[in-house]
Amino acid sequence: MYGPGRITPSLRLLALLLSLPLLAHASGPVTGNVTNRTVGKPSAGDTVTLLKLTTGMEEVISTTTDAHGHFKLDVPDDAMHLIRVTHDKASYFAPLQPTTHDVTVDVYDAAPVVAGVSTTVQELHVETSADKLQVVEVIQVTNQSQPAKTQFGPKGYDFYLPPNAHIVRTVAMRDQLPVPATATPVGDANHYTFIFPIRPGETQFGIFYDLPYNGKAEIPLHIVQPVATLAVLLPPSVTFKSGRGANFAQQAASADNGNAQTWTATQIAGDSTLSFSISGTGSLQPQGPAQGSTPGGGAPAEAGAPSGGADPGQAATADTRPGGGLGNPLDPNGDRDPWGKYKWFILGGFVLLLAIGAGFMLRAPSGTDGAQAGSAQNPVYASPLQPHRPAAPISSDQHILSAMKEELFALETERLQKHISEDEYLEHKAALEAVLRRALNRSSNAAAGQPDKADKSSGPTTPTGAA
Image (cartoon, rainbow, N blue to C red):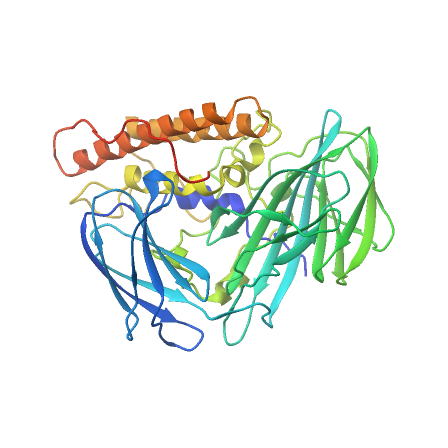
């Protein structure tokens, strides 16, 4: 049932970013264990890779788990790292936490088709901009397989877009972090697939695309997978009319979805076609709780959540307000840019580096009570489940991080709009990475009571990975 916010709000990522613990790690040996949750036993023979985040997910060193699922890696420096474990060709990630030299990673057996995988919600956010429609389509896929398995194979997750759709960006959301996911053309017109592992729990796909528009349009939809609930969100000033193949019912508007019109149709069969018509112009307004609050509402993920070891049943307890597919925008007035409401989806994989920076800069200094304002356990930013508490004045590093988030979004937007060349994009992005590394080093030295030292590694370097 499409009840209050059936889709896990993706922009709750911001609350997570500002409460994550430090993901940097001191150099030295790191040991870990990999458990295959499908069979409940240690996972032997898996490839374990150390990734260096400051150079675009660079692979630093790899090893293989032994018969007991155990591994050991020598971390060569104190840069920011993740551990990636590859099992049955699917990848699982775990952060290196501060002062932690032992990690655990949960993996699952994979198969091309897994029973218990279903599309629970397909949600289209539609607004107008000049002579085009701007659409953000969010598809939520739930994996409730028993025993728990990952669905991953050459076929992927298929979907269609309306004719003449121009894709701007595609991403996937997993464990509250966006990662790049490519929409690969399948063959026939407007047909695409995501070759992406669908692990136990919930996975979201975000597709940003434009459609031509002259004030009215009929939008045809080709539904490949059976969908429990199809939802269309529109500005109040736009007129909606059901078309062939489905009877949409209007849901009550609320502040939770920015007072947008929400039309839903349920139990859509696979391989079916339907349509709806719209006319008029307008923009979607911010979604969620009171303006000015930090997007949030979900408790911060526990340490290690990105590894895929969370209980698959946790997805069922997520906040489920209508129209929550993209959560609360960070642009409270909705007037910066048509894509501004969805900036964390747009930033994609590069947001992980900012997550690390946020946890680094906002952690409590060594020797202080972890419950004090500004610590990872008690962030100074408010959310519906984490009321705002008085905090110390915002540090210069926090201002740097906030400014960097805005600059990164502006940079990504200019790239999408083709206002800058690819060379300019890479140059500016490398410079931002250098500033972030310098700020992190300064924060690290301050926390350790050491004098500020120049960061010899902070010179601009061309990123090797995609944003």
